[in-house]
Length: 242
Image 1 (spheres, one colour):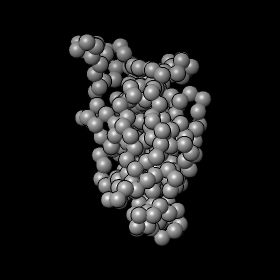
Image 2: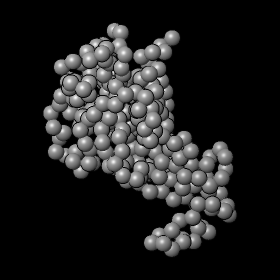
Image 3: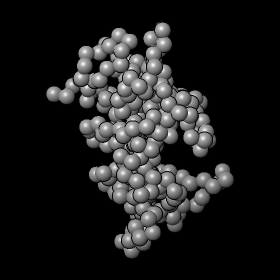
């Protein structure tokens, strides 16, 4: 058993919470290839690896039952929450009196959510990057805004703790990005528009639309979990520091 575990670790094919199934144990997750079930009698571990990370099928190390886990290659990702504070129709800093908090979101096609949705910018940490670098890169790539987002206090997020592996420095870190008066414009109806360059041509494959601003209450009702968590984390930072 230990020899198998050591080999899988050396080859980068196992995640922290998963170990090979004990001999003779029954698989509750079944493997199908081209629609046909695979005989799992002598199979103790299954791994699928790509540039994004590794998916493991085996036994949960502590619970003992058959389970699945995904560990991202880049230790997680960065979530960026662009925001604007308004006092009437004037853009102000967060520490000044303001009566509106708007969140910047992009329109993006996400097949796993059933189509086009609104979400805050985000992305995987790429090889050789730190979370801060990912946040800066994704902000530019998805909104066109130039600047350095700041880390919001709190633990890194785990997208789904039943199946995602996150270490002490892993998971998804949440960043804020406060926009200034020279980065947005307000029309006569009070709608806020971003002032940015066009998105890079290489982002068209992700079907990302231009950034728009929505009220914080609307952002908290979005179906995207990262957007809701990011908006809540920003609220905590701005108004509930104590």
